[in-house]
Image (tube, rainbow, N blue to C red; front, side, top):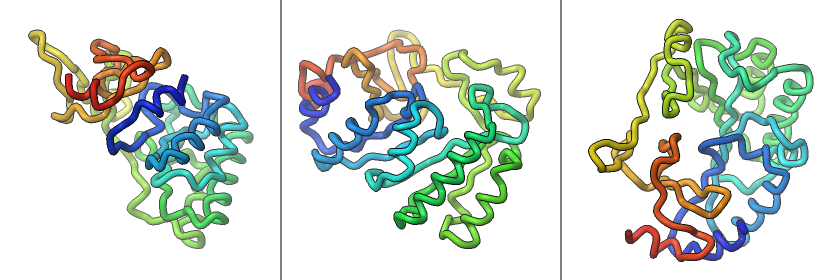
Length: 220
């Protein structure tokens, strides 16, 4: 099914492995990435380095991506779906080692929410900065999160010192993007294209990429 969608891309686009869920949850991610690469389509990824072990290993060692963003756990435990145990720490350090070995470190970005990275990760980050070419400007501490269509507890996050940004994507029958653009559609498992990567409520889709060309869908 994914190849059907890729074969219907007839415009210059890039693929971002991010959006509504962790890309490495899919055991088929390696094959999908290679399929995208074979079409000459650029791709970037944002990952927590959790999910299917085979997929995590693939993305850590792959040269497929123009940008590689790690969403790392924070010191306050705000990323509750991520358990930063010894296994995770090993995956994190191994990923940085493989990126360095493959001369990909310039593409790496590491992001966390709150005011500090999870402390056991800090020595690996410092080593990457000092010895492996990680760029300081590619480290981000973010103090703002989106509401994800009300899917997050805004009051609790505010108490943690985070700013809350609404991501409403509609009103009065007119759909719009929080960033004032509608050029980041999301491919859903059934082939439908969600109108925007900020449409966390799945309020609007505009066609199926399994059965129609992207240029036709985008012209609507």
